[in-house]
Every structure is written in structure tokens, then in C-alpha cells.
Image 1 (cartoon, one colour):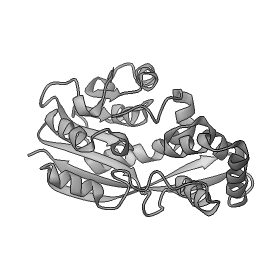
Image 2 (spheres, rainbow, N blue to C red):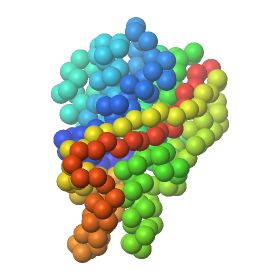
Image 3 (tube, one colour):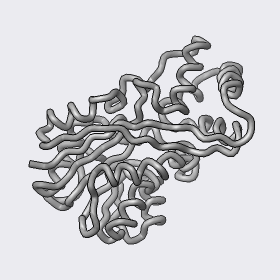
Image 4 (cartoon, helix red, strand yellow):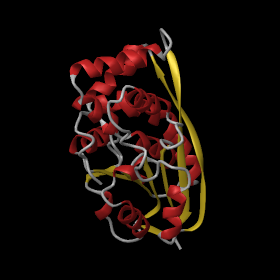
Length: 257
């Protein structure tokens, strides 16, 4: 997995996507069927949103996590000192075969250099009968309100094309198809409905300026005048004061044969 999309610090990621992980991660843990007593792996852990949810259920000493961005791995380790947190990529996991009862990744598949290789590695380190599970935002169907709004505005202002619609995992059925192709058994697919709260428009807009992910990097590449056009158009579509935005993610889980 590449860290090229995520070079900002953990605090900025918390404000960008971490606020969604707080409601999404518990839903993925439940959908994956993680239970107390399991040993579990969080692939692409970021600053540790999913790692923390797994730790609450199974205990941090039963959780391992990995991320290619050193600043994210460091933050995850500081926040969850009982977990085994390492710097590394999904396509080359540094654990032996059959080390875990479940391997999960949350909002990561789209940013792996080779998603199939990443899934294959998750399968390798999971015991037979164990679970591999993943989720990714519904970009293709417009279910991730924040990102959908940004790219809609960009298109209407003729400031480029959406850079996320064709990414792995963002279309309904993509994750399940990949899991089937990789040989996972009893594959189940579905949707997870998350949300995030914003204090006001400034709280919504400022994280876009952190250059995180495809949307943030697209904004950073625009001229200052065009950035203002995007900002003002988005502002007109959102309420004054505090508000909540919904975000749908597709998930799939499968059993290692």
C-alpha cells in the first residue's frame, strides 16, 4: 500500500477522515464477526481508529496493526500501546502464515498498490476458517456525501475529473468480486452507514486544505482563485451552523478456506 496520498500528520487525518471512522469502524468489526478471544490484524491502520475498536473487543494484546505512513503508525502505537503496530505495506505483511483469526482493512483497498496482492497477504496471515473483511466508501454511487459534494462541484465548475470513481472497492460489488476471485469462501457483501458531525462550514472545509487523499490533492493543485470558487460553491450547499453528513461504505467478508 502506498502512503503517497497521506503525508499529513495524524491530527489532520483525524479531522479529515478519522471523524467518519469513529462510526464506521464499529460497524465493520460487527460485520466481520470479530469476537472476544480472537487475534486480529488491522491492515492500513492509519492513526488507529479501527485498531482501537478491535482493542475494545479483544484486548490490545490481541491486536496487530500496520501502515505504510510512519507518522500514522507512530500515532497508532502511541494511542494503543498494547497493540503490535508496525510500519509496512499490505502487499508484504511481516507476520508468519496463520497468525490471526481475522484480518480487516477499513478504507484501504483503494490505496493499495496491488489490491489483489494485499488481499492475498491478508489471507496468508489468517488461519483456515478465519475471516478477511474490508470496506471502502461508496464513491461510484454517491453515498459518501462529503466527497461526492466536492467532486460534483469540481465537475460543475469544469475544474477537472473525479479521481476517485475508478478506484478499487468504491463500486457496489467490487469487493465481493475480488474476494471471490482470490478464493475466499462464503463471501458476504453489504453496506455500512456511517456519519460525521461538523461544527460549521469552516470545520468542513479546512480539512480539504490538508491535501489528504485524491480530493485534497486535487484541491491543492488548483489555482487559488479556483480553490475559492470550489469553497464558495460548497458553502452554498451546506447549512449554517452545525450539521451532520452521512457516508455509505461497501463491505465484504469471506472465510479463508
